[in-house]
Amino acid sequence: MVPWSSWAIDQDDSNPPTVDPARFRSPGEAYAGHWQAFPAPWPSLEDQVLAGEVRRTVGAAVAELPTRQRIVITLRDVEGYTAEEVCEILEITPANQRVLLHRARAAVRGTLEVYFAGPGEDPAERSEEVA
Image 1: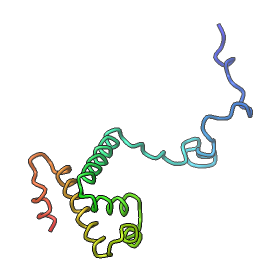
Image 2 (image 1 turned 180 degrees about the vertical axis):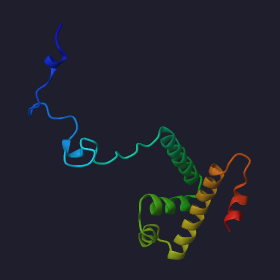
Image 3 (image 1 turned 90 degrees about the vertical axis):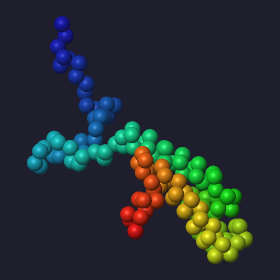
Image 4 (image 1 turned 90 degrees about the horizontal axis):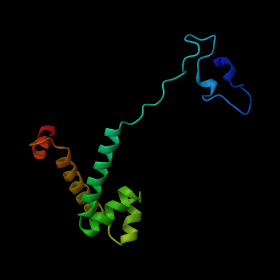
């Protein structure tokens, strides 16, 4: 038999601690040896799946838009271009850019309202409750 203590590993530079000791409370503090702070919560698998479904729903809604609306919403909300830059790129007026963006966002919002509506729920009734 070999005692467990004979398997101990020396704490030298070649074998640093697994967790940085600074992440624990020092001996003079209350709860010495306990974690300094709670770890950040991990996203749940359900949250990740739902986020993926929402991204696919938004992507499908954007893909179904008329070409000019799809281009404007992509440039503004995905690529982050300013309204002025979009007007310059597409050679359109600021008013036209606003109309195209508004219609595109409204269409995507409508698709999301249907997606998030409960079974048998009418999204129009939901917006009336909010008003």
